[in-house]
Each structure stands twice: as C-alpha cells, then as structure tokens.
Amino acid sequence: MNAAANIQSFPSDRARQLLPGALVLLSPFFLFPSTRTVWLCFLFPLLFLALLVRKDISLPRSPVDIFLLVLTVQVLISGLIVAGPADSLPKVTGYFFGLFVFYTLIVVCREPKWIQFCLFLFLGGGVVLSIVGVLGISRHEEPKYIHSIYRT
Image 1 (cartoon, rainbow, N blue to C red):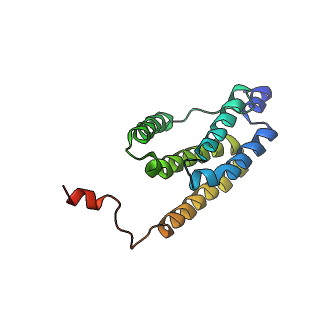
Image 2 (spheres, rainbow, N blue to C red):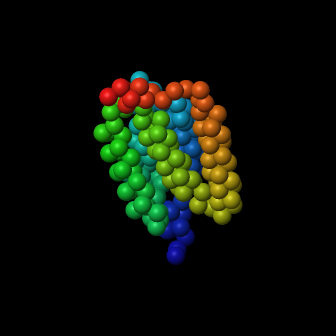
Image 3 (cartoon, one colour):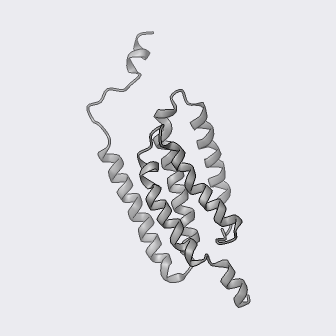
C-alpha cells in the first residue's frame, strides 16, 4: 500500500477532534432524553454523515456491521410501534448512543497507540453507564400498568 492511500484512510485532525467533542456535548441528550429535546439526538448522525460524504473520515467494514444493522432496524421498529413513545425513549436513545460511541472509536482510534486507550475508555464508559443505570432503579416504585392488568 502506498503512503497516499494510507494517509487518506486516516481521519483528518479536525474530524478526529470534532466527532468525540460533539458526542460528549450531545451525550446528556442521549442519556437523559425527553420528548422536547429528542431532536438534538439527530445532530450527531447528521455530522457523522456529513464527514463521511466530504470524505474527512472513512468507515471500515467490520464483521459486526450486518448484526448491528439488523439490531438497529429492530430497535427502530420497536421504538415506533410502542404504545408510549416516551417510555421507550431512554432505551432507544441509549442504544444509539452506544452505537455512535462504537463507530466514533472505530474512526478515531486507527493508530496503534490509541487502540488500548479507546478500549479502556469504552469499557470504562460501559461500567459508568451500568452504575448510573443501577442507581436509577427505584426499588419502591410500583409498576405503572399493574392495576389495569388486574382489573380486567
């Protein structure tokens, strides 16, 4: 492989700084979504697509792409047909946040020195999100729809 092709396969420095920065800035809207601010979650995919179209970044194909595509279609369909969209909004935006973090790490961490750092960052973020999820569970809350089930 020649040097020109190797240089083109790496993202530009601007994109390398822009993607993680945008993801960090938009992360509260993914992690704590509301129906009023859900439109802000579309900004990151639009930025990602704009960088792909301008060829500032390249997205390598991986064996998990087809599985992630099927899972994404399933999440979109289940998010659209649910009775209360506000109830499923945290799950759907959480899935897409994880997907965006995964592909951002793939784009940004192409150099060997960054791979281990990004791996620990990704795993550490998963642990932090798990802890936030466990702390967010209310142990004394009664299920929302239990009364309507038993009254029929």
